[in-house]
Image 1 (tube, one colour):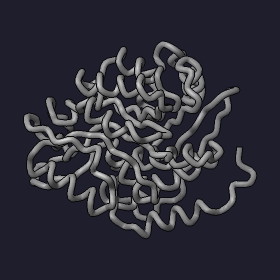
Image 2 (cartoon, rainbow, N blue to C red):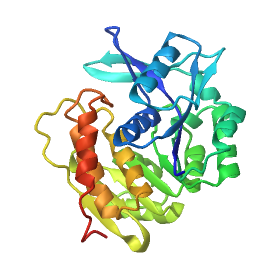
Image 3 (cartoon, rainbow, N blue to C red):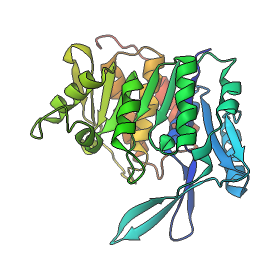
Length: 305
């Protein structure tokens, strides 16, 4: 088996009008991978509450396994309170949520019979020492190559902890702002984004480092200072950019699992992220969208490095 195991938060964004949207970066990535036809294993924790029930029901309906979703009798399902200030959203990521207390023994019981190909996680899920210790032990016990999706959300990150986890990863994905933060001691302030990416990759000794650049697309750098940059295709009906980075990560993981050349992976990840910008929210139940993506990927990759 070549499962992709995804460790981290599942939560609800709660808006002032009472609307509630299920998400969390790791959960969004797992959702997309399921849509593409894989069977990712999501390790997370939800409360014994209505929100936790809703998570399990949504996963069942989408065809995802719920074997890795733990139920917490003491802590609630994750919440993010979205507050509008001068027409701009501000996010209060509520502390002491169920995903902060992922139980190592339950996670080990799940992974024991599996042979994961990739372990994917972000940085928010390691803000609390319980989940952080569990993830660290999974790393040590299983030695699975790790894909780290940087997601810096103040005040829930610490420089030393993020650098530690980045140093354990084989592949790293982050955005331009996060690159600026993490490369402050590896590249001059005036250095280009490309140079900062190259220096950070060498400093952390990761195989591939992906940088999303918003409207400018994304870039990837690897060994021998290989660098490729891809502009996004036209977005004919921009709805929102929520979750575009998660869409990118899902395709990057698919490409790693299927040994795509990095340039091809970059192109396809940027293209899918652009398509998600034409849809409201970070995920979709439009199976046809995923079917079209996978059908397009079945074409040859001649000429890519």
